[in-house]
Length: 261
Image (cartoon, rainbow, N blue to C red; front, top):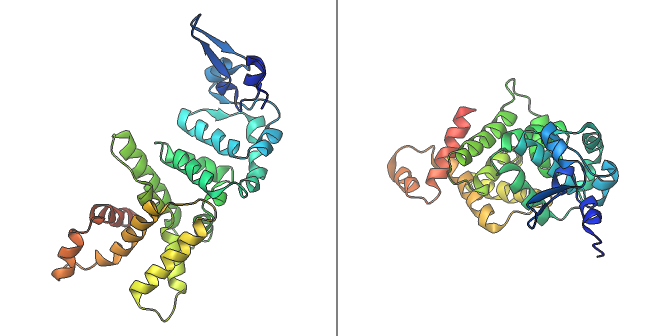
């Protein structure tokens, strides 16, 4: 890499608001690309030709959406326009990197607004293809699949705003709940518990092709899903055993989320 001088370095940044430098000797801000003006206008603007910059690194499309949702900024029309047709460039991005981007997008306290932007720009389907398909194919009159996704994101945003902990496992379990139900309905001649385990395995294997999910999250996801059937049993030994399960609290919250929908 040839880094060049500070002006050349600034022009390699993605957005104008990221191309400002602070000089500790003079306590001054050096703005090389009009970033201060764009902040005042609440504007996300790409440095250089947006389409060419997205092709250099397609994750910049996700960054534009994340900054817009987080800062309540508008994406400049010239910066926004190519995103609608370049989503496919995200497909070759390594699944591990995509997982990190998903955490930033949906678990930073602005998940609901980020979801709306991802759908508006037709990018959500490249992050969660099975969930996007379930939303698009939802035949219920009140669009329960999308409502469920939005409620899960809204609840996570509220917890973050209150300083409470959130786990990717819970949100991922919610995002993949309806794809899980669809896969479960396709499994025949298998007892309920093994069928659930098979459906969970199939759904997760499909999802990790787009966003890798570490085992420290897939295991509690499966436990939350498994607990849904157990929590329907209100009496007897099984009920008391369920209350002692380490995922009981998350699983019970998941039941409440389903009930809200």
